[in-house]
Length: 131
Image 1 (cartoon, rainbow, N blue to C red):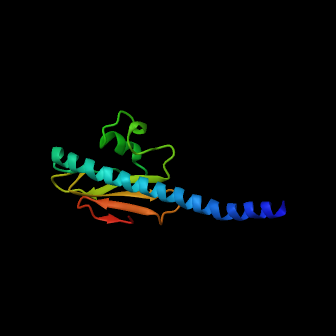
Image 2: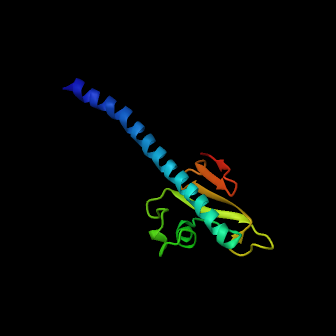
Image 3: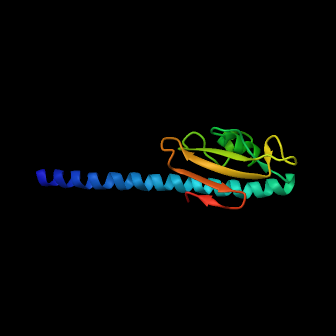
C-alpha cells in the first residue's frame, strides 16, 4: 500500500507541473491568435479609413471587440474578457491625416496579467515580438 501511495505521489509531482505548462502554452497561443486576428481586422479598417484603429492605455479588450471587430458588446467579441489572462491594447503614431482614435502605424500588445515578461506584440507591418 505504501508503494502505491508513493507511486501516486511521484506521478502527481510530475504530472501537475506538466499539465500547468500545457495550460500556460495554450493561453499564450490564444493571445497570439487574438493578436493575429487584430492584425487582419486592422487591414480591413485601414482599407475603409486610410488609418489604423488605436486605443488608450490599459486593458482595452472590450473596446477592441466593439470598435474593431464590430461586436455588439465587449463580451461578444472574439477576445475573451472574463477568463482572459492577458490584457490587450493598440498604440500607434498619430499624424496629420490620422488623429483621435486613429493612427498611421500601430502596435497591438497582449500582456500577461500576472507576469509582464510574457508579452506579445504585432505591428502594422506584421512584425511579431514574443511569438
